[in-house]
Length: 487
Image 1: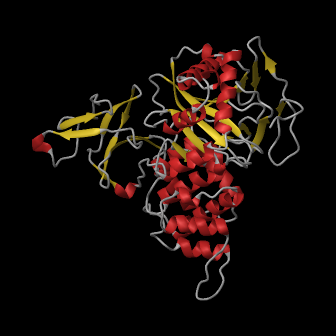
Image 2: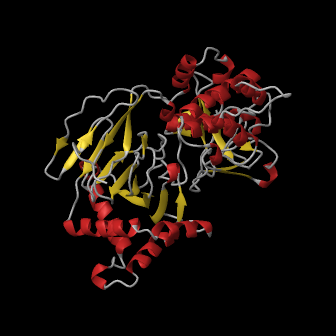
Image 3: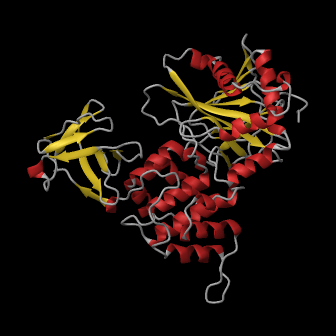
């Protein structure tokens, strides 16, 4: 499924094609497109490219898809169907088996002479070549950090597929890569953003322009929800309307696409079979979580997640909840994919499904408009229990008990500052809050992520008191003592 014409094209979203930036080429066959900095590393050694072409032959065989479907039906977690009908096969990823990948190679080799078979160590050769290609990006080569590569998985479509939903699944300083297996196929779409959405203020400006009635209390509630604010900071760009899409066409087998984290991107539409090896790199010792293949935020996923986090928060009113559902409905209207099935079965996922289908149930035998349906749902306080589709901690202030005395101090990033310690009565998590002296609504939190595990141990005779720095010990995730004292 080759593409004739220019190898590199750049197209703006909802507009005529934008001006093509002149590519910068180096002696290693690097094409660097800026912004936001996607590198195209041209194919390496011919023998490695030959192995990729043979692997493509194995993946494209008529027998491969039924094999994968049988594994999925049996509950095998080494393969799954993801956005827009694509298949994901884990090749080498933490906590994931590579059964499907190995079965395909075994099935392909069956009955063939050795000269036509894929080698037994195909996985090792594939991973090694992918990493060698990644290191050819001078931005990594020149870095002073040591990078750890991981989460290698094949993304395959057998039938024509539409573009994936724009999403973020990996954050700076991490990197993501796509090694092209199938020859002359489109590369990953990536976005240049004219207006970033990373703060509550950014979102207030955007949503204020989209709605004629913006309840002022809503953004106060949002500022108080530490998880929602954190999600907005990390993934808020998916909500931006100013995405100018760029694409690569006719990318050759063995080429590698290299993209830094925190860039909105999407798998391209494809009219024919396409296979790409996706993988990531994280700096050794970084405090930013490495890529999680089970986490991916689209606009609908992020807005739906924020709706769930805020719905039962103390202080939220009917106008706030109605406004949230109206914004969610706007993003659902712009989405080409069904996202309701990514949330736990219940009233909220059913509500999302109704908004997706636009088939609003009758109320007292009368048809409802979308606005009437949203108002009906906004009155339902139990519509959204506090939850998170990706299993992160979901917390509202109403779930927290303060377990430290007032006036407690500690060092935060080597700066002396006040700290308030809370315990979540639902799940027992210990959370540290560092309020800003300039604005009490701007709060910094630690302990809210699933990988963070703070511990507060009281000395036995003080177990019913609030922590004052002397009557117990506070431990970081790695077991280090966090020193606190009264000011």
